[in-house]
Image 1 (tube, helix red, strand yellow):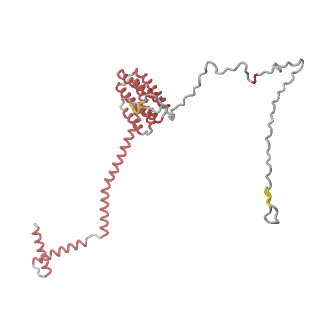
Image 2 (cartoon, helix red, strand yellow; image 1 turned 135 degrees about the vertical axis):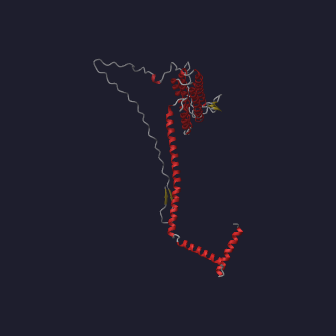
Image 3 (cartoon, one colour; image 1 turned 60 degrees about the horizontal axis):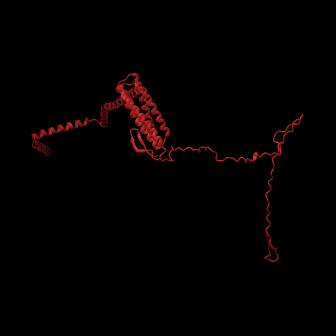
Length: 361
């Protein structure tokens, strides 16, 4: 039904309701009145059967409880997902720790060797002191030399040797660069001496291993030993320049700061400055002074008036005791005494007659 038709019907219903109120209703109007009465009765019946306020509150609470129960399963599922995620993270960490522990003895070329190197990188990242970092690099380089020795005993492949020697040179360069930077800034002949000794020891160890290594890897061994020789030369050159005003050239290479060349102007304020020893002049071939044959010290003057030999004791008797001659006593004269004469007396005649005079002194 269109909108105009609906408006027409509603208007007709309104006219019949007005005729019913005025008392001029037609038979059709009576039918409408009966329908209207039926509707009013149904409305009253519905109002009488409606629940009271308490019943409506109970129904409302029950509906709210069921809605809450309907929302509870997603929350529980969310908590379960969070617990599963936490358990998965803990499992990964546990497996990672076990794997890192198992990779402790891994050699270059093993599947766990990469995890071992990753653990060493993590240890370096957690070290903040530069000197400690340098020591860790040298410690890892020492471990690589030990692993190369184990590879020679196991007859490993050439690729494993290449991996171990490459990692050795990487840690060696990093450790030497950091340590020489600290020495040139803060001084330290002892650190350079320790580094020189360490480099010599590692070169000797590699020299023992090169005979058992594959022929293809021997050139790599020789290159590593040449690098260690450079480290020894670098420590020697830096040690000789630590007492100079100019220690380095300001440039760097694979081993860190490059020592300066040329004359060394000593810096007396350097912590490594050594005070030169005092050298005594060498003794000349001829003495600078010789005593005169006629001069003699006072103690060597001999009194010829008295016998110098021992006295012979009388026959049949006991020699008389030798009495020590007492040293002469020198008396110190007493200090002169000075007497101060009394000051003169001053007499002032009395200012008022009848009083005694005033005497000063």
